[in-house]
Each structure stands twice: as structure tokens, then as C-alpha cells.
Image 1 (cartoon, rainbow, N blue to C red):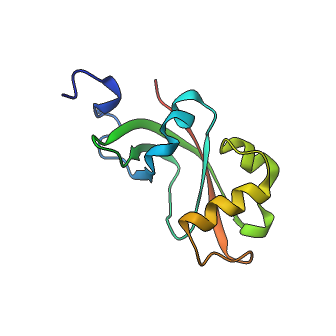
Image 2: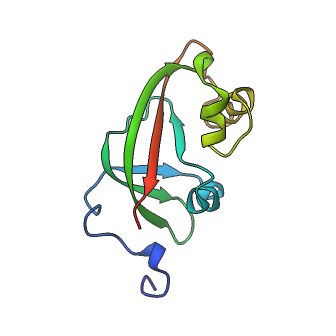
Length: 119
């Protein structure tokens, strides 16, 4: 089945790379380039090769490169962070984060992870 859809194949350069897991609703935004960041709470990432794993059925794995990681408090997230996540404003980003992390507070530290898909 992986031979039918190239996005399901594993890139040999990133096969052993750390996985960054996503809800499948983010797949099209990542593929289109509308989403180039992800904000994580207690879910560390590292610079360099990565696998973006979309938890769908079947699972979709995209080879990527983490190009930047910025540590900041939730209250310091910016409109630019939101736009890079395919949203419009920092307040909207904070609301979305509360869906994934219900106990998240404005003073909590998060990692803003910038990535690019490897062609």
C-alpha cells in the first residue's frame, strides 16, 4: 500500500529521526505550507531531521527538518506564531492549544517548533 502514496513511505534519511505527532486535521495545512510551526507543551523536539507523523488511518509520515525551536511562555506567543500555524492571531493559537493541553496556563513554557517538509 505504501507504494501507491509516496507520502506514506518512510524517507531513509529520516527513518530513525524523532517523530513529531500531529492530529490528522493538520495534514493539509502542513502539506500546503500554511502550517510551518507547531507549539508544544512538555513534548520536546530537537533541531535537525524529523518525521512528521499524522495519526490517521493509515498513518501518514512526512520527512522534515526542524529549523528552529523557541522557548517562551504561552502569554508571549505572537500573531506571527499563529500565522505560521495557519491561524490568524495569538489569541486563537492559545485557544487551540487549550484543546490539546486543557490545563495550559499563560505562564507555562512552550516550545515553538519551526519545520520544513523535505521534498
